[in-house]
Amino acid sequence: MRQDTICVQGGWKPKKGEPRVLPIYQSTTFKYDTTEEMGRLFALEDNGYFYTRLQNPTNDCVAAKIAELEGGVAAMLTSSGQAANFYAVTNICEAGDHLVCSAKVYGGTFNLYAATLKKMGMECTFVDPDASKEEIEAAFRPNTKAVVGETIANPALTVLDIEKFARAAHAHGCPLIVDNTFATPINCRPFEWGADIVTHSTTKYMDGHAMAVGGCIVDSGNFDWDSHKDKFPGLTTPDPTYHGVTYTRQFGKLAYITKATAQLMRDLGSIPSPMNAFLLNVGLETLALRVERHCSNAKAAAEFLHNHEKVEFVNFAGLKEDPYYELAQKYMPNGTCGVISFGLKGGREEAVRFMDSLKLAAIVTHVADARTCVLHPASHTHRQMTDEQLAKAGVTPGMIRLSVGIENPEDIIEDLEQALKQA
Ligand code: PLP
Image 1 (cartoon, rainbow, N blue to C red):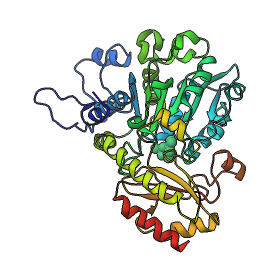
Image 2 (image 1 turned 135 degrees about the vertical axis):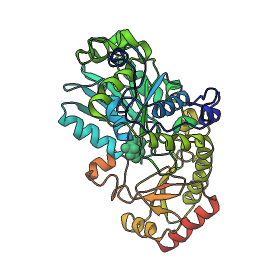
Image 3 (image 1 turned 60 degrees about the vertical axis):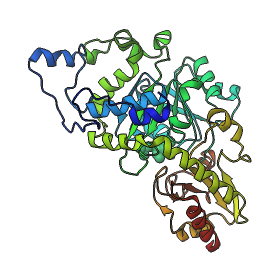
Image 4 (image 1 turned 120 degrees about the vertical axis):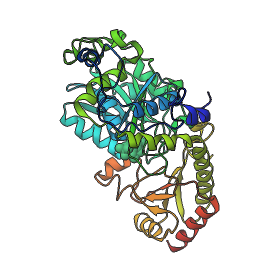
């Protein structure tokens, strides 16, 4: 099936007499007839549901739809995008290990890897995504276990050269993990370019209506963990907390997601509620349509801003003048995303005056909503960063992040125009 069909038909496949719409299995637990039956589930010897912290049928149907959209072999939903990025890494890294990450990533991801993982004994080296292959390679250490980047970085809106990062990662026996939140699988499928694992904050375009915080990890099934046995003992040697199961031996291409579910979800939680998974599924049904409209509206808004005398710069890889236009044409020729970042002449003060004058676009901590919204990264999402860290993340003090919704483009542009008059 093609992407827009998978959005509608993927995941839930009702059998005779079953509900047409994905049911919400709002149950923490599942019943069995014999002690042995449930025992076999705990031993990972049978497939089946027993406790929603590990797996739930509603969640699994939605995960299957996202796996299909990305072209992966399996996926796991998490209760937030942050949890997805945390689990994606800690499923293969532990204290004493090291990561390489693009410096242009979401502020929350930066804090997670730079500060929280550090407290847990893992170190992260941030590299300029535009650095040469040699410069990126120089960041690797013998204990490097993964490379991470964002297809389109939030809020810098740089486009990741996925093939360059995949080559560097693979040359050092590491998987490439790509956060594909902004591009979505409608515009880019990172596995087709060499990425091994994809993460999402489903809170954004996938949900699309600002209803449910959520995340997802998808595995391509392509990374050969057994060829780097010593690097990934968690997957390739017996797990004493699961009766000595060796995930790669018992589960093959499903090893990574099975371990994330059986071990990380079991011990750390962060499962979404089935109700939230249901809402996510409703959002996914219109993802392809919405993404198309978000992209065309954003292009119109970016062109308007680019030609406005009060605007100093516009970052939007769909604009021919943008330094990432060529990379965007390669990796996402049908469109990038609905998010634009831009700065006004006059910097921070003008940015604040402009934002406070908007009428249709609301100031909210969010992007990728059907409703147009704005945020000031230096005051909001990236507030904890020093000026030097801000510059490395591609954020200037006056930068405005505009998430263009699916309203009529003329109304959006009229709102920008009247607010620019006030600035
Ligand atoms: N990844 C990206 C690219 C994001 O933009 C965000 C949030 O904005 C996250 C991850 C974190 O997701 P969540 O807010 O769902 O935890």
